[in-house]
Amino acid sequence: MVLVFAEREGNSFKKSAYEAVSYGRDLAESLGTTCVAAVIGRVENAGQLGRYGAHAVVEHTGAGTDVFEPAVYTAALDEIAKSQNCDVVVLSGSYTGKILAPKLAARNKAALVTGVVELPDMSSGFTVRKSCYSNKAFTTVQLNAPNKVLSIIPNSYSIKEFPGEATLTQLSTDLSGSSMTQSLEIDKQAGKVPLTEAEVVVSGGRGLKGPENWGMIEEMAELLGAATACSKPVSDMEWRPHSEHVGQTGITIKPNLYIAIGISGAIQHLAGVGGSKVICVINTDPEAPFFKAADYGIVGDAFDVVPKLINRLKEINA
Amino acid sequence: MRSKFSYFCTTLTEKKRDMKILVCVSAVPDTTTKITFTENNTKFNSSGVQFIINPYDELALTRALELTEQQGGEVHIITVGDASVEPIMRKALAIGAASAIRVDAQANDGMEVAMEIAAYAGDKGYDLIMAGRESIDFNGGQVGPILSELLGYALVNIATKVDIENGRVLATRDIDGGREKVSCTMPCVVTAQKDLCEPRIPNMRGIMQARTKPLQVIPATVSSGSTAYASFELPEAKGAVKLIDAAEAGKLIDLLREEKKLI
Ligand SMILES: Cc1cc2nc3c(=O)[nH]c(=O)nc-3n(C[C@H](O)[C@H](O)[C@H](O)COP(=O)(O)OP(=O)(O)OC[C@H]3O[C@@H](n4cnc5c(N)ncnc54)[C@H](O)[C@@H]3O)c2cc1C
Ligand SMILES: Nc1ncnc2c1ncn2[C@@H]1O[C@H](COP(=O)(O)O)[C@@H](O)[C@H]1O
Image 1 (cartoon, rainbow over the protein chains, first blue to last red):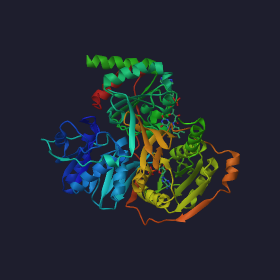
Image 2: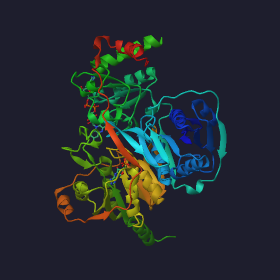
Image 3: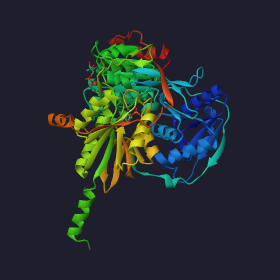
Image 4: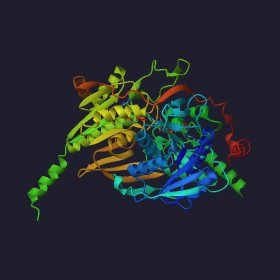
């Protein structure tokens, strides 16, 4: 059976949870089995995961599951997997998934592949494609153990809809004793589209000259329902928060649309955004390397071009 | 009431908690490498490629050195690989590690690497095991979390800050859309993320000393991993960029709406 970890934020699901569940459903179908979703901690109506492909949902609400803790969540997920006899586990490659996937695989001597970008291929054994060399290449990996753990790059798979809700089972073992780390404080920008989940991202580089010029970037992002991102020097200089830094040493994103403004397109920057489906580049320098990776380009001054884009978006929205 | 003297002694003993830190170091192609493959796309083409210490491992190593400088103690490095990785191990020694261990194995995946490291480190009493958040070649992000599981240690993954206070680890780690401050006991596995520290560059004295520092080679203990890289491919080349005149920049929005249905 296929188990999917459905990540929550507070008492609702993250978009990446729906994506992972849809992926798990399609995988389960190709294996001729069922898809079970695992929820850790309490969520408003966990059965809704049926609408994204889960045949069944198991919710673990034992003591200790309220707040994420690596050892506790690994134990909870493992307990759910064993209770359902699941041999394939799917997680989203969020920061939480980056901890749980390897830990769960280590417990079960599973074959582990992280950074997965599509559904596995069962034509010769069990193989799956993942990105490697900081998104400069892909590799097809053969999984040779009975237990398998896959973590998928967020936004690699489209969410699907299915009729009806899934049946819900509860587990409530007390896991608080396994806790090893204590969360002291969480610092998050509330109310913003999370970067890794955003379908559209508007990103600015050193070409924008200073933090005071991000108003137009944010305005455009808001009109597009987009998240904002930046290049490394921009976060290094603290023009923008570190959490917006994309690239080889920052976050890897795969939005449907990436709009790069005043960013040169260095190889390390492209490593984090090259997987975007459509790339638009706005840069004064026609020789900027980013144009080689772009689908659409405007050679021009951001301070002239961006206001024009904003105007057009406003006309359309009106 | 505590005398001044006993207060002095406790702070002294707290300070003098000698730390033993193991840093996992991997060799990766330089960040600017043009990636190509050989043997019908089944092997990475390493000809002419310069190998470096994985940038995150450099951060882990530097922070480990800073911590032992504050607390007392020693930093060791471990690499799983064949003899070709020794130059980067010498570089880690030149940066300041006291000794190096090479597990003589060509590991297939992160699970295998972590099992080798756990087999070595299990009974050595390390307070901290540090690794990079991911290697920039296979981008697994696997070794650190797997080690924490195999050894039963606490884990701070993707850490941007690590301090030791009163024998506890105080750290900040990346989470989706922000950061979290955590505290845990040792032993603990920490994986390094950008911002953890400024990487150190070896100086002449360090380079000279590195030549005579111990580099121990030990045999592999794990048979084989459970994954295999069957083939590699490069992303499809992009078609030519469609340029839009800056004077009619608004057209970009229309193209994205009509051609791509993205807006
Ligand atoms: C190990 C390593 C890791 C790295 N990791 C990352 C990473 O993760 N992410 C990352 O982004 N970088 C990373 N870098 C840095 C990377 O090499 C580049 O230096 C960086 O991406 C450049 O940022 P930028 O494009 O914003 O700035 P610049 O290179 O300075 O480019 C600014 C661009 O803006 C254009 N411009 C100027 N004025 C205007 C205007 N008015 N309107 C429009 N365009 C204008 C210029 O023509 C230029 O192309 C890394 C480097 C190393 C060595
Ligand atoms: N062969 C290796 N030898 C020692 N440490 C390694 C090796 N491969 C990876 N690591 C460590 O594990 C981290 C994560 O690597 P990975 O799981 O491959 O992304 C790296 O940053 C290193 O600290």
